[in-house]
Length: 418
Ligand code: ADE
View 1 (cartoon, protein in one colour):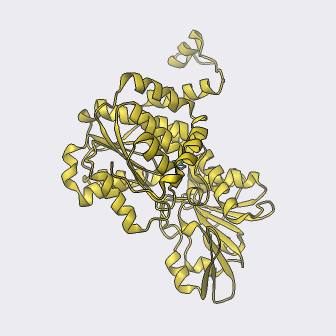
View 2 (cartoon, rainbow, N blue to C red; view 1 turned 90 degrees about the vertical axis):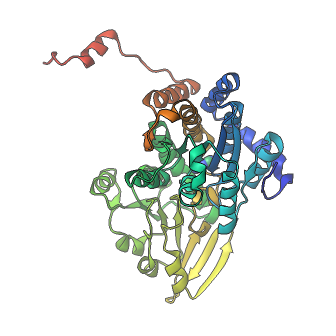
View 3 (cartoon, rainbow, N blue to C red; view 1 turned 180 degrees about the vertical axis):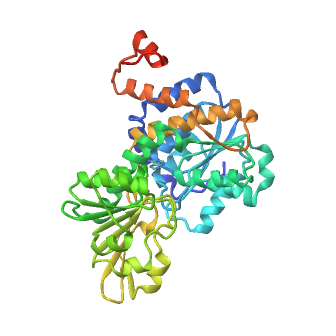
């Protein structure tokens, strides 16, 4: 079996950490049980380009239990947990191509190693498999049933491919399921981003000014949790509706040029490019701490910062200190890569439970329905989304009411008024 990981001797640590995470993934475990019986993915070669974490390991085992031949590479050079990679290879015989800290060339070599297995279904977090297949390995397209996509950034890329008519197979936007973005993006990013920033810096948030760029589901979650830690939160937005929502949620809203002067902590979660630029770094306070928790490391203009800085040093793990011509220091966390996975362990397993339940069921959906689908981006079928919510509540021991017959009729009628 071909693979490329850091160190096989880490496998036992990885196995225990995977077991620990799995204890909080009841919905995925129910799916795994059914998959083991029904083998809905029998004979499917499934290529995963995901963050190689303990939660991803549980997804791999679920897909494998369903009969799939699973092969994995990283969806970010800094997010791989090397002990998890070792455990998947050693204990589950799953080929993994991922090493934490790999350079760009190795990252794409790993993507291509996974594509060499001629996948029938792709599972992406950021659309790198789909984009590499379309741009460099189009000969693989004829063997592909379809794909699934985990994250907002990937869905944006795919929708742009579909709109231009260049997408050559169907893809399910797992990100857009309610049981994904309302929980993973909001509560997952909220907690894990703060976790990453705190682990990297060991700084107190209470009484500081925390600037959140972007008020999508990730930004909403991050702002809410930063406020909960006692920070004064400023929100940066370009969409008037979201900006208004941030105002009414109780945050100060202003342009980044103003916020740059007063923030102690900054975090971008926009999915766009160059959100914090040279002119903003220039006016930051001495010691400002800047991170990104969006998918790609393009949200911070680090090229300008590098050019402008008089001095750069790694002052502690995951913290690069840049000294500017005016003497002020700006600290960049995790090289501007998603800080929750670079400096911490990503979202906790109980939210990934729902995200990856969507992934597992979407892979099954693609296997059974894919040949009938158009070459566009699909939503997760609503009944699947609702079933995941129902199972999650059940696993949490929470019961809810059902509509009475009278209530159902009332909702279906238009005649009844005052
Ligand atoms: N994305 C964010 N957190 C994650 C995790 N724990 N595992 C996989 N992908 C993630």
